[in-house]
Length: 246
Image (cartoon, rainbow, N blue to C red; front, side, top):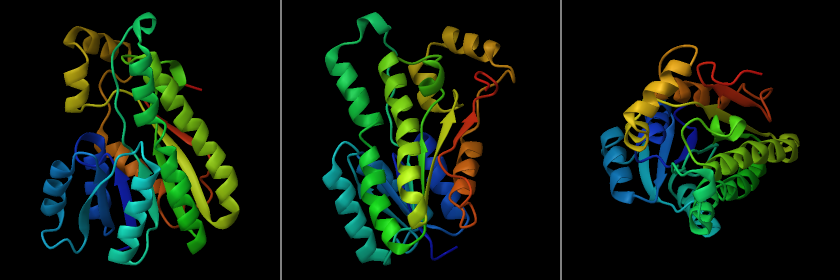
């Protein structure tokens, strides 16, 4: 496992940090990719002071060129890349009838244009004959959202669909692509962006009666990235406490 290399986008904080940390704990070499490079570097140094098993990369997920630069940098640094977790995202609570064009474009850019990561790293990993890609989507992409805007929900729905498209096209070349759709998680960003009253209502309407665990989402990503996970492909794993059942 120490020879496997993973890229996690949006890894500087929140769910991305939890995912990156968990992969590192299990022996992966981890690249923490984020537009907020200072925070990514801080976490990277905590994981690996000498950068031998963790490094930080500045990456804007709206730019295909940034994914290409990250790929080239990691191949030069560690020789290969085996796994991509497309986690970077940004949500915004806006009433559907009040969403502006700029807000809509921003949501699509950050939450959906990251499919360029699937394209860039998918092609590279396929050239090696085996690898894994996991798109972190959202419950919002399935049910329209419990506490987020419709523009965010639409973008995350696209992330789920794009995972299926890449899964179909890359499977024969040894690359599986899946999505994870978490519901509301017990993370600072959730508490910061959703009012306490609204959050209490969401918890009350969740069958398990509590917010989700980022650590468990990280475990799900770890399982989908495993070398023997070849038969999970084009799936969307629902981790939402029963808010959405199918």
